Amino acid sequence: MTQAQKEILLQSIRTINDYPKPGIVFRDVTTLLNSKEAFCLAISILKERYAHHKLDFIVGVESRGFIFGSALAYALNIGFVPIRKKGKLPYTTISEKYSLEYGFSEIEVHIDAFKNTQNATPNVLLIDDLIATGGTALAAVNLIKQAGAKCVESCFIINLEDLGGAEKLRSITPVYALLDL
Figure 1 (cartoon, rainbow, N blue to C red):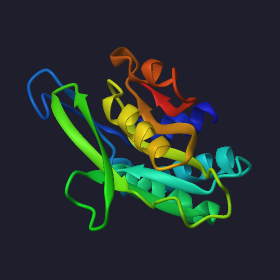
Figure 2: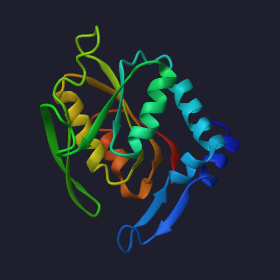
Figure 3: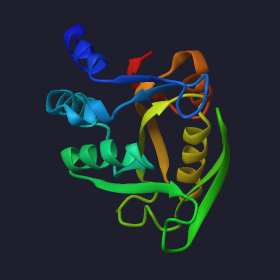
Figure 4: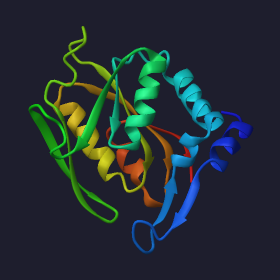
């Protein structure tokens, strides 16, 4: 990625202080999504990066991971699998509890999410808008493994470096971020 491309992406992200609670600096990617230049640029960069990874699925974490993940899955002509908050999927699921920088949560995936492939162990890419403390991403990678797939890399639009989540996640999977903030 060139410096000019990085600047386009950086300038498209809104910063909101004290959201969702005091002391949190929230990076709002809805403004990146709203910019046809920035959104198309982000997906193009990711498509180029992952075109030769022999992926079977893109896995997106609710909710902004759905947006980036489905667009990238379309660009790569592969399937998309959602990881959702507990209670949102209609079929048999497996779940994983985790802690956030401001609370606790639980996510789940369909038990048969990776069955629609020829590979015995499907290769998947996990994607989300950002990684902070890493709780959600670690839980998602655990779910991917439990469901019988291999997470070849975890991808984020933003890595909040000071919170250390990417470093924790690197102990179990490679990590790539478009922007380190």
